[in-house]
Length: 51
Length: 186
Image 1 (cartoon, each protein chain N blue to C red):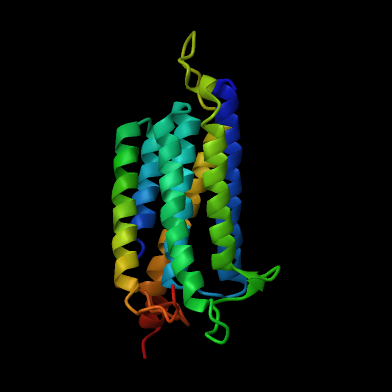
Image 2 (image 1 turned 90 degrees about the vertical axis):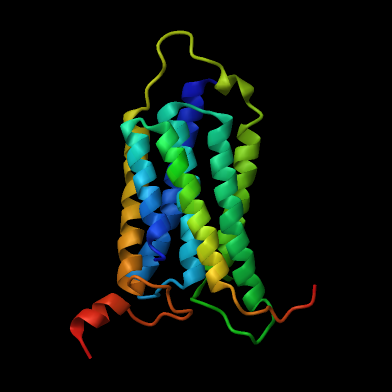
């Protein structure tokens, strides 16, 4: 599951090379959303710091 | 700054980001330091920034492409800050080895900051966004080679993440490539 954003961005690079700008931007956006969801899933414990 | 000069600068930026990812990958392969989940997400941030640079190289400079780079660096930097804060209290341990006194996540935050500053500086050169007079310029061989290098790094990181974590979430402190161990059996 954690490899999804890498493969999404790999497809994005493929679209760049193929001249598909819109598709590359869409794949970037989806990959970033997946990355943020994975970040949310992994950051579950509270930090022991005082802000 | 002409559009073609901006493309060349972006290609060199792509090379710089790729070198960061190559260094991390070499550390993983040669020294056997497996990346933690947050480390992987920071790599995704670098790859996202690389995609924005690749868009500039292939299609010419565009403010939106710089937006892709800046947002990716901000997302990656957010992960770096979370990891730094997790270890900032003395005695709470660290992850991985230090290079020149700083751990990878600290270097990552500095580099993400440099990427944002670099893009902000490049955005001041507005002539790069002017339409070309004649036929639209094409990406140079060097630029295309840098895009292919970044794509190869995305593939390598994707495959190594599958080997390390399988189909699920990665363990917080990975010690072995889970998929390879699963293939070997108990």
